[in-house]
Length: 334
Image (cartoon, rainbow, N blue to C red; front, side, top):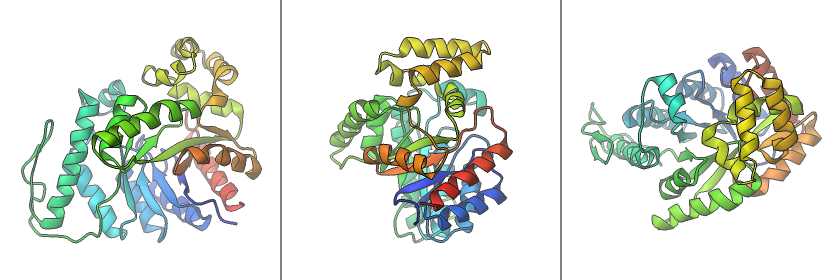
């Protein structure tokens, strides 16, 4: 039996384009509804192209591409071309990225990220309209684009690429509610935080814009053991995500994990995570297909779509690739 509907897989972050296409084809054969591409090592739009070229049915999307590292026109052009090329199978997932990481990785800063993201999405959609009509411009609070269609000429596309936005805090989630088709929710999340904090924020944003509340794409980490899962969550226990654990009165534990990690005591950090909050997070420990199925059923009611990813923290690219292949094999066995 094929994989359950609305369940997709995320390609490993360091996957080579040739393997991206092969894994995407395997995911399509396994019955997955989508392949999702990270923006952590490779150029996500090139990986998306490789996945689209190797498939004919499933959707391919970025989950997520870093918005502020690229101008709205660059992002819109990549998304438009991929959607045209694939007959509308591309989904544009965007995120702001944590400020210090954005500067350390790309050498750029972005103040007022929530308001900036709202304007960014409006600018991208204005670029889509310019490509459709052959001309156009955008004037916003942060972005001013006079000639997005530098070479004039109208192009047909049945619908704009849908835009998903990543958010962990309520303010950015309200922006998702205002302007996006879906929230791209992080795996460092709990059932109650999603239901009691993020969903109300989504609805507030949607009400402010007088539109329906967006759907939710939830990323989950599928690990072969609790130890591997706990080590992955070290990478996500950062100040920007601490509020998730604050919701469970576990902020002090988070501080201890961050201190241990900073001082190189990763085994201690992983032990604290496993003992205190691993079971709350968006993690599936799957030694077999039955365990994977149980994990999917736990989270399925909370989201419209699921993206299953493999751990990467402290794991070389070859092992990430093997784990991704194993995950797809498990899905194919359903």
